[in-house]
Amino acid sequence: MAITVKIPAQLRGVTKGESEVEVDGETVGEALDAVFDQHSDLRARITEDGALRRFVNVYVSGEDIRFQDGLETSLSNGDEVTILPAVAGG
Amino acid sequence: MAVTGLRCKECEAGYPLEARYVCEQCFGPLEVAYDHSGLDPAEARRKIQAGSPGIWRYADFLPFEERPPSTRTSLEPGMTPLVRADRLAERLGLGEVFVKNDAANPTHSFKDRVVGVAVAKARELGFTTLACASTGNLANAVAAHAAAAGLDSYVFVPADLEEQKLLATSVYGTELVGVNGNYDDVNRLCTELCETRPWAFVNVNLRPYYSEGSKTVAFEVVEQLGWQLPDRIVCPIASGSLFTRIGRGFQDWIDLGLVEGELPAFSGAQAEGCGPVAQAYAQGWEICKPTRPDTIAKSLAIGDPADGPYALELARRTGGSVTAVSDDEIRDGIRLLAETTGIFTETAGGVTVATLRRLAEAGEIDHSERVVVAITGEGLKTLDATRDSFRMTEIEPTLADFEASAACVQPAAA
Figure (spheres, rainbow over the protein chains, first blue to last red):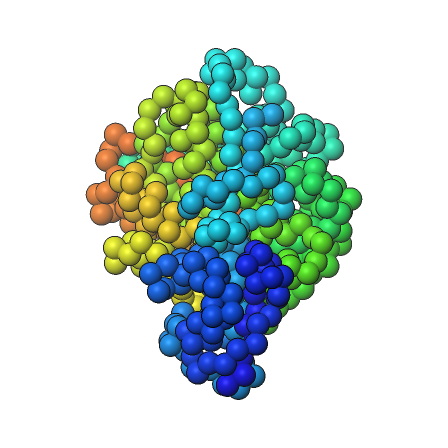
């Protein structure tokens, strides 16, 4: 599965400025692990004890993964996974 | 000026006073830090009372490095009436109830407070275009304050918003964008847009400053009660920003000695059709589970509340609560407030009054308590919610027809 993971501006300091990372993965969790393999400092920024930090939102093609199966949400070839801060709005 | 920088609410990492809202270390929200050391409370109170008629009187407690605009050059919000609502209290069997009527702001909601602060900060930071993701009231405020300041603006809203709120936005000449989706979709889109547009999104990249505006509700309540604290606040929760920043406003002034006492109990109000904070409160969770909104209270229809965890913490810490009420209770709440105070509120105010009624009927509010109810918006903005609720007797223009009609409940004088 070829997946594009979009990195928000606030995290590009640990992805050498890259705004998108191309990875393989069957689920959101696998795709994120593959990103962490390329950019190891990213893991601690957005996860804690294996779970996403509470102010991190992840979307698959615009859909919040909390309305799906969380990190177990399955991916299709060409899907776009977007990481965004959860602290906007209101 | 007392403002010193931005600070992460989670890990306390510090950042300069720029258009940024997320901690790069832990992704937590940023808030404004101040240094008020050496402040003389009596002198501070005198300075406030000699200041501007609205929120600029609190400029020393707002996040500006320069003086904010004067009331002559901006739509200055604030110092809205704090109305003693004795007949409302009597109907509910309560002792003392005050209504903080924020419908009396320039665009008829509390959003003028946060936008007033955000726009002043946007100008200080050199922005020329404002933007926001809104459920309606914010849209009105951003469009109006941008017009007043001579700035361009983009307003993003769910496309199915109340017509009144769309009209009361576009009239100011903003670029109004209706998004086919709910508020959380709009918010996600704006979070993404914020990365590629050099705009001041008041509730995204300027959110730390914007939310400071809500503290002015607390400051005004303290001043209007004669430098005293209420015992309880009943306040609607959408993102939780207003609810938590009112708490912070009281706490700041307690810490600085401007007012004595304890934080009031914070009772949050949500609609059953969008009550992620009420659900988390009832379940004992520390974080909220996002929900897809389905309620007439569209201004509160945020399914993924950014300040949800902090709202829960505040309600629990102060002996408050978070309640969710039905759409019928919301309509009844609008009517109850109107009949007992002469204040016509929108659906969010209906949620708040319905929550007050629930708490009163459950015996949660002691008769000795002084309760302040935060009415955040104007009834004329959500006419659909009350459209079928009125009664009118139609007659011919004759005395006889009036005398014979159902409307003639008082006999003519002899």
